Length: 377
View 1 (tube, one colour):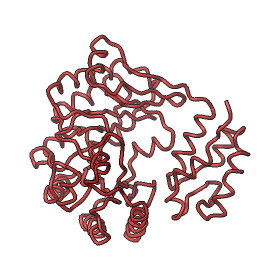
View 2 (cartoon, helix red, strand yellow):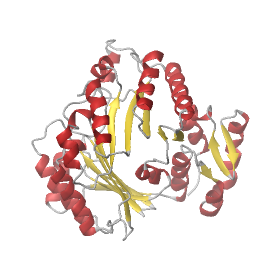
View 3 (cartoon, helix red, strand yellow):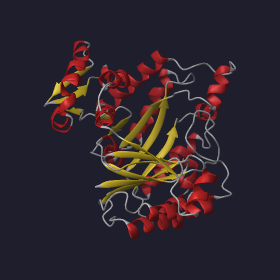
């Protein structure tokens, strides 16, 4: 079992907070897609004949692709990989791309799940973020997708930024509930270096983020969604009716995945590699049948730390049986480091799994870092 991630490095415009790899010029889109399809062929042995369960089109803005371009990529995957029984094919989309005609065309592709970048249902907030869509387009995109039969939807929301009051945040959550969306991904606004937002804050144009306010909005979000039938199954993700993201859940469970496209990451179960984050050099290398990737060989210490970081973020938690069987040499140190967090009521043990408490979810990264093995092999 494995997944394939396809990075489409194009956007109409740059959101002020975004530091993902993309270009706002579509001039070389055809050349990029040719390179992506070439890499799919060249990487055919990476997953060692594992059955492909999921494909995830991310970016950038993959909804800039036509249905024919999506079909060509998926057909290339099915030609060279065991991918005839796909469970989930996700397309990240922007609301302004999801016209009725576009949605109808996507029905003729293997895509069966949309991830819609809503971020907010307030125009002033969307303008502040420099998003390309307006609130009415977001509502239309959701409703039109549902009407067309795309029931497996997820939307993204952002919290913890200066314009977002408690009242507006509550209305955003209410809108998601009213539209019967089965999955929500919510992220705290972070200020990444070299973004427009970082520059605005440095110049005093914008206020910095308020960690206390962000924590309050996170706790309100978690409580309200759970009251309405959602499971808080990963720090940033909520689902009802078992509509988990299969692709991302496999990431957190350590399942193998192959990343295709500039800046895409891959994991073969033991080691990790990542492609160059430069569109021109990526296309140039693939034109010579070279995969422009660097590789990191993961030691047992690296692998256990990766497992701690990802598993602890989920509602399934850290499996102590897995630690004992796969990483027995580190078991005593991990157990010792946990004690302080039991005392603070940040973690609890259930059925031999270590789970974050509601309070602990606010400190997930800190807890994981404290549990990391520092010395080892």
